[in-house]
Length: 488
Image (tube, rainbow, N blue to C red; front, side):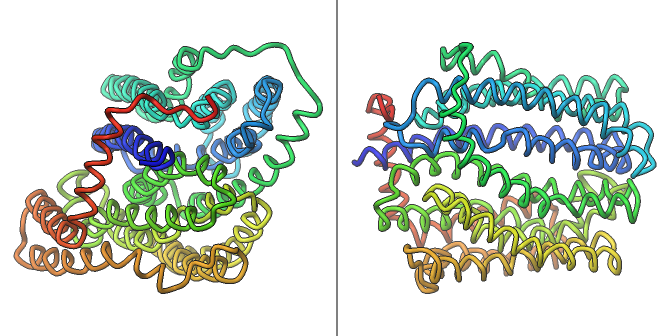
C-alpha cells in the first residue's frame, strides 16, 4: 500500500472518529439547549456571531494554510516562530477593536443592548486561536490526525458539559456564549503538549513575506466565503427579528453542522496531500472524485431524513416553539445535497496553488448570491433565505464543472463527475421512496430514521461491497504499520 493511501486512511479514520464524537455531542448539546432556551436567545447569539465569526476569519490571515501548503524543503523554523508572533499581535489588535469599537455599533444596529456585553465574551476565542494555529499546522503537515482528534474531542466534551451545567443553572444566553468559545481555550495547553513546540522570540521579515503572500489570498477567499455563508444572518436579524433568526439558525445548524464537520475532516486530511501531489494530476483527480463520492454517501441519508421528516422531528424533539424551523430545515437540507457535490473543490484549487483563482470564483458566487438572498428575505422571510441558499448551491455545482473543464488542467469531465455521484444518488432515490411511504403511514420519527438508514446502507452495500471490503482490509494493514510522519 502506498504511503499516501495509508496516510489518507489513517487521517480519515481519526478525523472521522472526531467527527462522530463531536457531532453526537454537538447535537445533544443543541437539543438540550433548544429545549431549555428560546428561539430569540439563539437569534441574539446568532447576531453576535456574525460579527465575531467575521473577525475570526480575519484572525488567521491565511498563515495556517500557507504553512501547510508550503513544501517541507522550503519551510524553516523561522516560518513557525514568525507566524506565531504575527498571529498573537494581530489577534490582540482585532480583539481590542471588536470589544471596544464594534460591539456598541452592533448593539445599535440590531437594537439589542445585550450584544455590547456579549460580543467581548464571544470574541475571547480570537485571542486563543492564533496560539493554536502553528501547532495545528505542524500536526496537519505530519498528518498526525490522531492527536488532533484527541485534543478536539477533549476540548469539545469539556466545554459542552460545562455549557449544559450553565444552562441548567439558569445562565441562559451565556451558556450558549460559553459553548462557542471555551473549546478553543481548553485546547490551547493540549496543543502545546502534543507538539512539544514552544515559540521563541524570532520574527523574520523574509519568512513573513513568504507566508503572508499566499496567506493573504486565502484570507480574502475566506472572507468572501464567510460573507456568502453568513450574510443571511445579518439581513434576517436586521429586517425580521431575533425570534425568526433563532428559528433559521437552528435549521442551519442542523444541516450545515453535519456538512461543515465532514468537509473539515476530508479537507484537513487531503489539503496537505494535494500540496504534496501538485505534479501528479491523475492522483489528485482520483482522490478528489473519491472524496466527492464518500462525502455524499455519508451526508445524503441525513439530509433526506430532514427533507421528509422535518415536521415530526422538530415537534417531537424541540417542541412547538420551534415550528418556524420546519420549512427552512427542509429547504436547507435540500441545498446540502447539492453542496456536497462541490464542497471540497475550493480546497483542491488552493492545494494546487491556485489561490487567486479560488478567490475569483468565490467573488463570482458572492455577486450572484447576495442580491438573490436580499430578494428572497424581503419577499419570503426565512423561507426565502433558504431558497436563495439552495439556488446558490446549484449555481456552485455548475461553476465548479466549468472550472475543472476550462480553467484547470485536471479536466474532470461531466461523465466522471456523474459517475462519482451515481452510488449516493441512486441509494438516496431508493431510500426516498421508502421515506415518503413511512411518512404516509405516520411512522414514528425514530423508527423511520432507523429504517431509512438500514435501507440506504443496504443499497450502498449492493453497489460497493467489493470496495468496502478492500477498504477494511487496507485499514487493517494500516493499523499494523507504525505511524507515518511526512517529512520525518
